[in-house]
Image 1: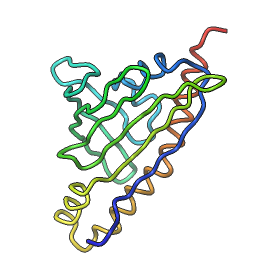
Image 2 (image 1 turned 45 degrees about the vertical axis):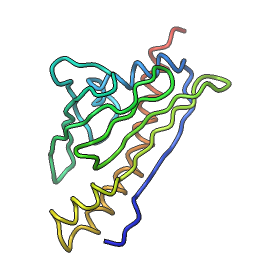
Image 3 (image 1 turned 180 degrees about the vertical axis):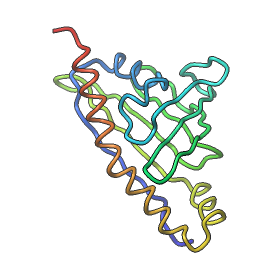
Length: 159
């Protein structure tokens, strides 16, 4: 299993406030508006963005469709929104830092040890290639997600 835990992060400056951007991103029901893979999310039992809240994500790629159960692990308005996928398989986070001209939004993806182990159990000899595919999806998807968040936020901002 000798892979290191894949990690990827990217940032963009958005002409909007940290609180407004947090409100956008932490409303997981909007995830399909900006994610190239996650097409829809819904809260379990009407929960909202608070630590411990759970939601389901519906993901689609050309050769595969799947759903994930997620748990919010950080919900600090205007600072950070983060969630864990499955049983500590992957951690996604969004941080919001005020900068000149708006807010620096950073999206981070961490493939956690339990996720690596799960891929090895489920995919066997194909696990390294499947793990590399997930890492590549994060490397290409995060910049697209951030660009879409920026476009939505800035087009919604008052003139």
